[in-house]
Length: 328
Image (cartoon, rainbow, N blue to C red):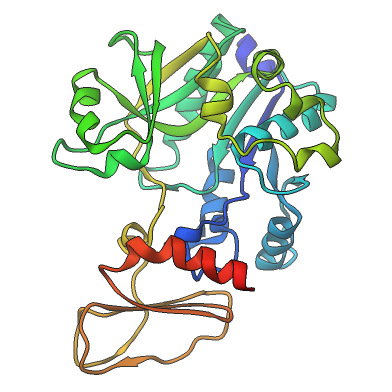
């Protein structure tokens, strides 16, 4: 057995996502169920062979346990509150130190994998091998950019490798570039950040010590004062030893209802138009819906929240959700 397969491996699942862009969703995004599987189910399959920890808030853990109704789950690492992925990963690194892990893999339960999940085992094996060769480096996954006429790339973080070799060192990170920048990024063989990170425990510990020490040194009380930074901004953009592996595995971050509706088939709806869409949370009693005399209307229901909107109006949903949360 190779040395890489002997070392203790811990997998962290980031499952604290609660997106305002997916209002009226009233439970963690990780519980979205697509084709019979939740996003959390997929994340656990990806990390098969790892000792898994689910990183989320107390609210998230309660909702996950309730949804799984007594089924066996990995242990939780409970964030004091949601502060974005930079603080969350730092907090988790501090908590798992007692496990004496040698290799750490981090995935997001916000992403839906379109590709066969079996491909992730081979991907993590490649990443682990890189971490064995370069124990001080962090290794990330970059996905090939979408077609040239697509502007969806402006909603993601981008990675510019130093060369076309695979893997390659990283030259630059660009967070959510403007649309006019996308053409240049594609010319530079830019990759979309897939949100999968790996490295030795020592590499993660050193990266946080150098660039975000308060996330691993502070008390629980101080956690609420940490800046809400993504892992990319807090660590990856500053750490000098980062490598990227190109992957053809297809995924979606399901960041908006416009994207999500491509994967969630509509429930039965009565009416005089086939252009309308109805979705309701699968964790509650289902209701009947009917739309008459209207086209391109969406009805979205989750718990006590109900949204009725035109399919072209979702760009305003974030500000609406923010106003409603402040009101409540």
